[in-house]
Each structure stands twice: as structure tokens, then as C-alpha cells.
Image (spheres, rainbow, N blue to C red):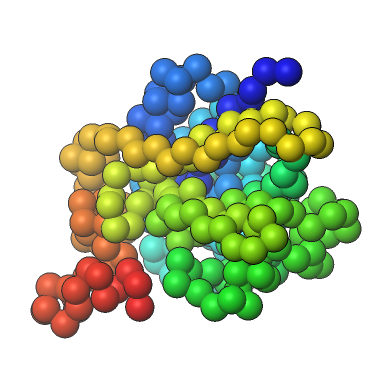
Amino acid sequence: MTRERLALISDVHGNLTALEAVLADIDDRGITRILNLGDFVGKGPRGREVVERCQERCEVNILGNWDDFLPDPDRPDDAALRWWADQLSPGQGDWLRGLPFCHDLLMSGRRIRLMHASSETVHRRVRYVKSQEEFLGQFVNTPATIAAVGDGPVPDMVGYADIHEPFYETQLEGRTLFNTGSAGNAMGDPTASYVVLEGLLDEPGPAPISIAFVRVPYDVGAELAHAREVGCPQYEGYEAELRLGLYRRALDDYRAGRLALSDYYHS
């Protein structure tokens, strides 16, 4: 048997410049199989182009919270949301909302589940600092996971996205939880990140498996120049996220000295 390498990307958020850099790095490594854990759109100016590239390159695409919320005809009538939604091509909103909630696979004897956020909904965040209940809750079958992949064995390993910061954690009984970080809107270290998962695909017996976290620099200035040129909404917040790795809602507190970066990310 030969080892298989899978690239796991997520949270591109309309940042085509970062996505192209990540895809180029994946190609340089000779990896041909890419799985996307969601949040293609919102924040950045090129959601349409990001969706198109991911439809071309990713063999699995998973629903994210922005992918569900932004094209929703019942969402609030907010000017920024309307701008990002109007940037999509006809049919892309329906494609996004129709994406599966999760994806299961077997590698090196591990049952692996890939999803965007919590096991219950794409709209509930599970942070790096979390309760034991939240950790264990990522491994259970819920109505949302059952609808996507059936009521089979629960996973041994779960990879998810949403929080924009990569991490890896193991606990008793071999449970492993990891986060891919963000390819287009990384927090903390703002460099684009993704994961390479390597092992024997579809192998039910124990075998070596690895998870590698990759950081990819890209031309942030070029991405921001395009955002300014097309009038991307909330540009100042977008710049703070791309240059500082600081969520836009914390920008005022950070500037006023009321918030240290370490306080924000791990509170």
C-alpha cells in the first residue's frame, strides 16, 4: 500500500490571493487531493472567484457558517452582507447552502470526521480553550452529522475549522481533535495556514498517520489593494485581520490599549 496525502484547507473568506498561494504550495508538494472545510465567502472581496477555484480544485467541499448565512434570503438586510452576497454568481449561493455538513473517511485505522465548526451546527464556535464537554461533544453523532454521513461509528479523530487558529490536541482513548486554521483569514499569526493529512487511506488496521501544519506567506498588500479598488465593505477591519491577525470587532479596543492580543485570542 502507498501512503496518501490530503490537503485540508478552510476559511478562505474571499481572499483569492491567499488561496492561490496555498494552492501553489499544495501543488509544489505534489498533493493532488484537496478537501475544503468551508467558509468560502464573506469578509474578502472575491467570493465568486474563490468558489469557482474551489469547485475546480477541491474534491470535497463542506458547509461553513458564512456559506449558510450569507446566501440566506432571510438574513438581515445589511449593506455589507448585501455587497458580499451580490458578488456571487447566479447559482453559487444555492451551491454553498447545499454543501454537506461533514465528511467521514478512514485512514490508517482511524475514523476521521471533517466538519466546519461544532458537531451540532456550523453556527456554534468551539474555541481552542474549551470545556471537556465541548471536546467530547465534537466526537458524537448528532442529527446534523447523521443527515450527512449516516449513524455509523463515531470518529476517533476530528478535524474542524471556524476559529481561524490551528491546533492539535489528544486525550484518553485515542481521541484527537485538530483545527486547520485559516487559508485566507488567519488569526494570531496572519500567515495563511492549512493541514496535510498523510496515511493509508481506507486502511482499517493500525498504520502510521501524520498531521502537518503548513504556513504559507502571500502578498497581503496585493490583496488589500484589490479590496480597496473594488470598494470592499469594512475595509479597515479586513486590513486589521490580514495584517495583524486581529478580528475586526476587537480593533478599537486594541488601538485604545484596552486589549492585548494575548487577552483576545485566549479569553
